[in-house]
Length: 271
Image (cartoon, rainbow, N blue to C red; front, side, top):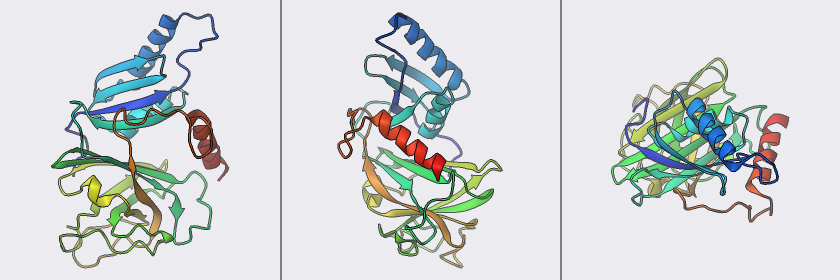
């Protein structure tokens, strides 16, 4: 388990409103502004290279920082940011990408999520031996919370219906493929966990579920459910790699990605 990323990852981000075609301000002024924003926002991140594409409202960033940290830094500028894809910086094809949105709280999906409580995990198969896992969570109690991939993709009863930890090699608890350790949440309710796994494969976990527990999981072989009850759960679904998703309109609603992003943000605020 690593605190940082030792492999270089390229991500493609939609970053809204760098350039207003109706305004009289020259395009190059927006380009300079965009470059300044990224340099300022990502000053403390390990960024190797970035490209700003005003025509497509896109920023391509290459570096060793986790995608969640880059997105958070860009959002701190007040812009709307949408992560569109991620993959190896070499441009070589990767073994897939996936995302898990933690949209179920406790064991009753019918109940609304508590205010300002949400989580997201991203998976990128960098190469055959390495899967990057980038998890962020907000709104949980301060302290450590266990993070696990579960064998089933059934969260009809939240964590209660997700099955056991994903354990295809029949190992003791603490050494399951699905045992990802703990995410530590600070006093501000924010926590993140970034690691590289040589055992998790994106192709093996798509369609399964993830659960974050109410307490710390010491990952010992004595009990498969250390960490207590699950508080957040979600389904792992396939997501796009770098430049694999070029759409700007959501087919399900007909709204632009910016409109959808604002709707989702409003839901978080109102919950």
